[in-house]
Length: 396
Ligand code: ATP
Ligand code: MG
Image (cartoon, rainbow, N blue to C red; front, side, top):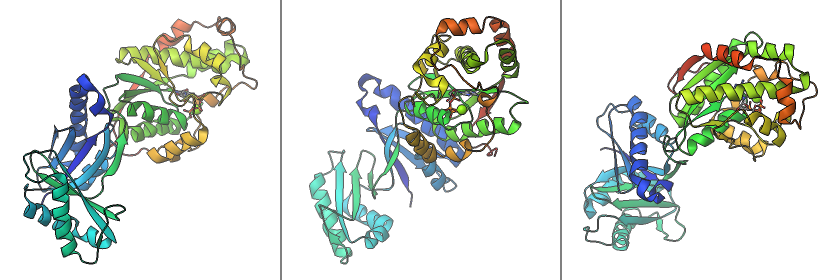
């Protein structure tokens, strides 16, 4: 007998006139994610996404795992559909949930009736089914206040559905309803978490990475591609734009005062990222910056680096403690890769005494020997675009 998933929508249901658009996006995202696991029908009724396997070959467990990381879903459950009558509902519970029920000390039945043509009220339905179950499982007590286990019955338009407790979903908003943005992805802990957080707000994420071969190794680049792959578990596919940064870093080293190296380098990163972003339809940049964490993350430094950009820069981690960022990284599965010891280009030519309270005038003056435009144009000529999805082979 078949099992189907019900995914309950989160904040989406509050969005009034935009609701339809949000639902369509979510259905499209779920459909795309399910492709890999076989033939599934995905439809939305009464603010619930139904995911239904259409044949025996469908990989139901794989699909379930994937559904748990889809943004826009507040909770989800696996359930058994059945006829909308008492005997059929009781039999479905016995077959599908009987063993779980036997493992509990106490239980209750909670019913929801969105098909108002069903002859019993929710309370009557719970009482009737609860009574029959109590008879069939004399070792398990009925406890309507603090039950060990709850059996749910939902009488909906197409059928009735029975299930055990729902699991929390990934939350947030469906990827894509918040527009598209480009994350500056380093090999560190912070930027993958920043990408995840903006994806959770419905933003489609693309990435740019600055790479300083031979100062940084191929492994450092693979690490970033692997981090992007891990983020796509939540965000859906992304393209990583790999920009060779060596010439720019050497030009800065040879032509600028050391205390401004990092700031000037970051201004190049921002400006190049913005140009790629605009070319790829992204309306904002995302960084993993965090106030006060390093010398280039003071307000003054952010003013100087932000000055080259005219689209919003989202910094979802700006006010967080490092330990909280680390715990998100652990939860989403990027931490172990982030802490692999391959050098990032920021650690190349790091000044001994970086300027923490720069003014824009000082920095513009410090970079005046550089032909910024020519350097940026050459960097943009050789951008490597790498498409990444979660189903790619892990790189590390
Ligand atoms: P992270 O842990 O994300 O590397 P961080 O604490 O090391 O951050 P910085 O090195 O100052 O901080 O970098 C700040 C932000 O700048 C990063 O979060 C990232 O968004 C961006 N960034 C840094 N280095 C690179 C790089 N090589 N390529 C792309 N973006 C980068
Ligand atoms: Mg870093």
